[in-house]
Image 1 (cartoon, helix red, strand yellow):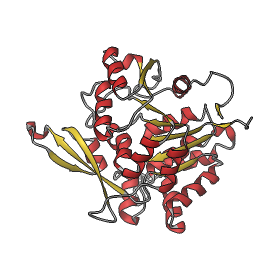
Image 2: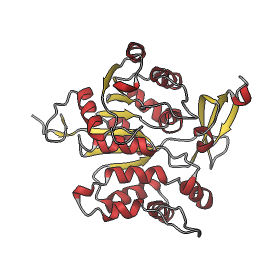
Image 3: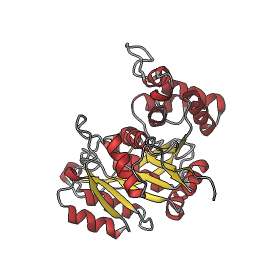
Image 4: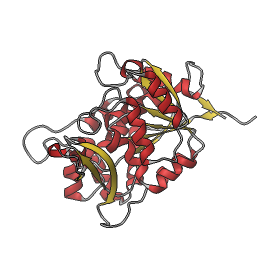
Length: 329
């Protein structure tokens, strides 16, 4: 009988949603890979992207922080990595980790090698990978601006995330190669193909979650991967991107962007689903079983509780709730 190995888990997303998913996965397995969006154009990440031409580092930094365990060693490095400079000078608002990653990108000339080095610095067993090795630009078709039904094109992650209109569809363009389609990171594609479980969400639905489906190589990998595919729904609609969305509408737009993709499980918070029957039907239409449970953090409105989320993922995978990490044959 072959030796059991750790469950190979891959999480796709960005920002706080991906941070929560990775924190939950660490409670299940040591073999975790984050595939992170690289379209951020705001704040410290946007400044470094514009000034240096590097990948926006903020979401990558957050993923590194989630996988770096304070209980596994000295918490100093993760704390320093997340800290921001104060004051009013040129460094004001920059996260230390953003600057370090930008430096690694420039010195190595290879964002994957740079992120692997950052993982070694943190003592992380898993990996943090960009969805693409080049900075990406998000464009959205938005209706409802100025009270009109006419579609308008909105460009940039910050603009799309904060639009007062209704996002209908998004697309990706390459910043470095105008007019050409962006390419997925090869290592990210292979990680999805090799995974035992792939998680999508929670997070900004269009700009952090669905954006991964817009890279053809990554979308094909998700379709053909034999992994158990799990969607984790947000607790509340987000102003701008998904204002007024019901839980099932999140699945509808996912299907619109990748109609050939089938999902095995949909995890949603019980209190966030006003009409469970509709969600059960919507999940079944994409091949999934909806799992309604209590995954909201009681002390952090709008955030998932990592422990509860880990329990729900275990249930979706059929892994018993034991005091050790999940294993896979």
